[in-house]
Image (cartoon, rainbow, N blue to C red; front, side, top):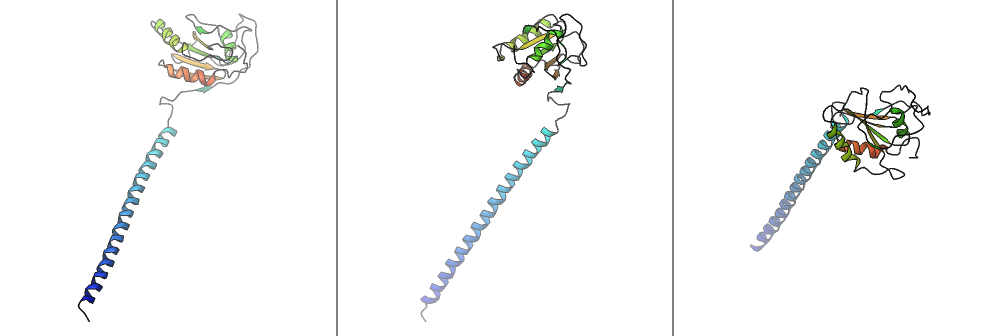
Length: 206
């Protein structure tokens, strides 16, 4: 037997061993990559679940709007100037005068008998209270008013008025059967409420 034969066999075995070791290294690398991918994916799932839990757990103490659904009190017309009693104070529906108020920002209180009629026609009412900063409050509201889209019949259907009653906050947004009180002026909140409830009253005429 020649001395070349054992050398050739040894070389083949060495090549097979090297190939096997290379396959094992590649398999280990793939396992590490899969493990790293699963770790990243798991961290992403945990983070998403944490965000979801925080969102679902948001309660009254957060900045979420405290929107209130108000019982419907009907929508009968009563004589202009008559005293109307409402279950809700401020009202978000109920008896009202046959005429409605013009839209805009008022310095003097508008009688609810008028603006409840506006609500019936899909308008938004913004009640506000103020002391020595009334001019600034009205200027802020006017700034929002100027940016709001028009409703049906080409009119910005927002009516802002001081309110004589005590509704427990500095501001309150009202739509037909809905109220949203808040204490700090928030133009974005006003615009969101307006866009959501615009023209959603039981009447769609002006």
